[in-house]
Structures are given as structure tokens and as C-alpha cells.
Image (cartoon, rainbow, N blue to C red):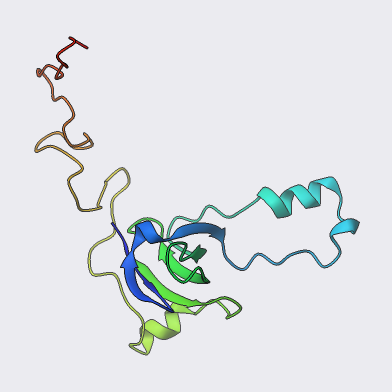
Length: 145
């Protein structure tokens, strides 16, 4: 579970927030002048970045305010949270100046799941908690289902 620091309310559990898509997508100046293809690209085409990505979030069960976040889509590490309307922070400059955060662990190898939690059984990665393991039978209800 992520701990997201709301700019207005402070650190809160990720269940209080909703993802709002890619940040810094400008609304077209003259939407009526766009072709169908240009309008479709504005509505549906977004980057699919592996690594640091600028996102919009809303604190839906708290202050209901929107904000931007720089988050690593591989490690889920939150690099920066900043107000709507502010430019995207340059991580290279902030990290060099010692004001930003840097990853504390090695990046994951392709196909490696690194999020902590109760997501697997010992020796059988990828199984959900309580999932039947090899050779085990699934639990049945009193009705035999």
C-alpha cells in the first residue's frame, strides 16, 4: 500500500486517492478546429512510461483537491508531489542538489515483482494469499462447492 502525502492534508493511505491520468496534458486552444484523428489523439493517446512518470491525483475522500505526482511506475517510489499548474520538477537537478529522493534499492530485473506485502507463498511467487498451492486441494464450503 502506498502512503501518499497530500499537499493539503499530509500523509494518507492510497485508498483515499484516485488516479487522474497523465499530468501536463494541455486542452486544445481551438477544439472545434481539430480533425477527428487529432481529437482522438488528445483524448486517448497517452505515454506509457516505464520509470518516472508525471501523474494527476485527487484526494477524493479528504480535501478533494487535485495535485501532480512524479512516481516511478516500476518501483512505485514517489519522487515528488507538487501543485496543479506548477511545471514538472527536474529530478536530475533536485537529486544533484540533495533535495530530491533517490531510489534506496536496486531496480527490479525484467519479470521480477518487488512490491512488499503478503503477495506470495514461500517458494511459489505470484500466488495470492490463501491460493491453493501445488498438490493442495481447494477448500470447499459446507455445500460442497
